[in-house]
Image: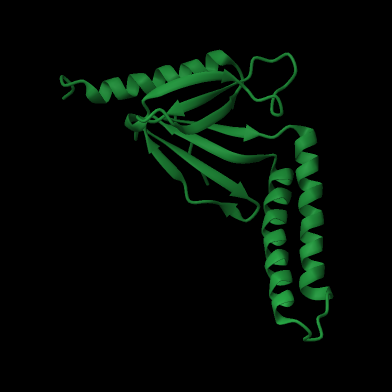
Length: 174
């Protein structure tokens, strides 16, 4: 059971309906193909290298199929938690069986922010959806966070992160 925490803001990158359907169909096809190759295909010991190559392809197809099918069914693939109490972001990838180990980025590692309109695939026509691109000290992209309902919501998160970093840097804090 999860407790509501006012210090944490959670954003999930919801996938558009057509993309969800495509991912689910491709995932199920890959799963069926992998299962057929693993259990239904027979090699009569003719070529061990070919057999190993087919097994590698089958297990790779199974992995991609599982990922695509779970993202298509769930409707999202990534979740970012902005924890203003701990001053960090946690990015988690998801599948049907659970979530990955979170990728944690302290707010102080972020040197710059860019708020962009959301990508065309995830965007609702006529909306003001936006995403945040966070840069590291070398100018490279550290993380993408989105999709926010509006540019104002994205700007609000940026302002809260900057305020949290400034509060940590304040020498008068007791």
